[in-house]
Image (cartoon, one colour):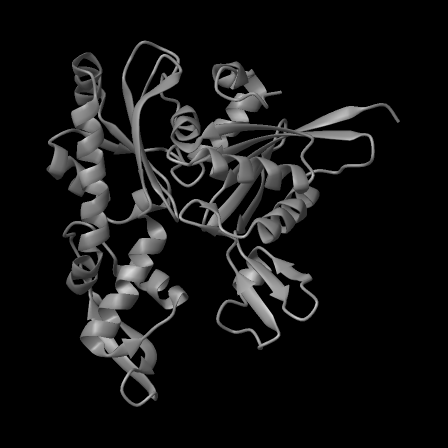
Length: 339
C-alpha cells in the first residue's frame, strides 16, 4: 500500500499520440482524435476508434482533434484524451504518483506550454516535465546532443515542423513552422478541388500522399483513381491523379519547410555549421517518410541528409531515454516543474 511511481513519456502530436513507460517501452500508439457526444458532452471514443468516426458520425456525435498545429486547441478534450491514454498505459491507484515527460514544439509560447502542463496534470499526471520535440527527437535518434558538436534535426510531424541546431545539451538556434503532414493533406485536397472540381476528405488525401506522393521525382511513378463528390452537381465522381500532380500540389508546403531549414542554417555559428556539413542533417517524424524528401533537402542545401532509423518513434524514444538514463537534468534550468 506504499507510495510508488510510474514514469511516463508522451509524444503529444497533432496527428498521433505515443506513450512510453519506463521499463516497458512504447505502450500506446493512437491517433490524437476524440469522439464527443454533443448532447451530453461525454467522450464516446478516443484514439483509433474515434478516428474511424471522422466524417462518418451522426449529428449528435462529433469526432475532433484537440490539437492543431502542434498545440492544444481544445483544453478540455485534450485533458480527457490524455486521461484515457494515461489510464490505458499505466495501472494506477490512489497511492500512485505518475511522473510525465511531455514534448512540445520548440516554438510554442509560454501560454501554450502551460496549457500542455495543465492538461497533463488534469489527465492524471502528478509531476510534469516539458521538453522540446527537436531535443527529444535528437536524443531518440542517438545524436551526440550533450557533446560540443553541432547536430541538426528536422522533425516533421502532423502539425508542425521543428528545425533545430543542438550542442552541449541545449538548442543553439531553432525555427518552428506550422506546416507539416496535415498541411500536405490540405494541399492535396485544395489541388484536387481546383483542378478536378472534386471534393475529397482528409483520409483520401492521406491515402494519395502515402500511395503516390513525393517531394522529388522517383523511379516507377504512377497514378491512382480517387473518388469524391463533384463540386458542380454534388454527385459522386471518379478521376485519376498522377504522382507528378501530387508533387505539384505539395510544392508550396515543402518550399516553406525548405526555407525554414535554410533560415536555421544561416543563423548557425560557423564552427557548428562545419560539424553539420560533415555529419549531415537528420530527418525525423512522419513527414521524413515522404518519398524523396531527403533528396529535396539535400538538393536545396547541398548537404548530406539522412533519415533517422525510427523516424515515427524518435521523439517518444527520446523521452524514454530521458526516463531511463536520467537525462532530465539537462532541462532543470528551463523547466521549474521538473521532477
